Image (cartoon, rainbow, N blue to C red; front, side):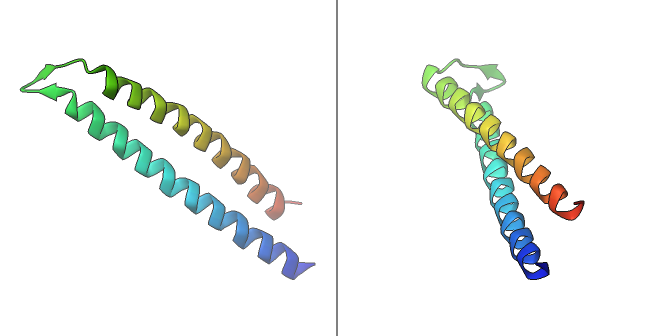
Length: 80
């Protein structure tokens, strides 16, 4: 039973790390897109970039929800 919990904990931790890395990459991409909308301190509206930002924000919300679920599973495993 103890080995099962350790394996499950390692698997959940690996999943959480992967989601965290994915979230960081998306946040950095969003920041780059926001920066690219500014030229000489003037904001230029680019529909393609705005759509991409919205798409990334949607994916980011999904990743955040998955991270919360994984976090709850980890805490439940540690506090039976």
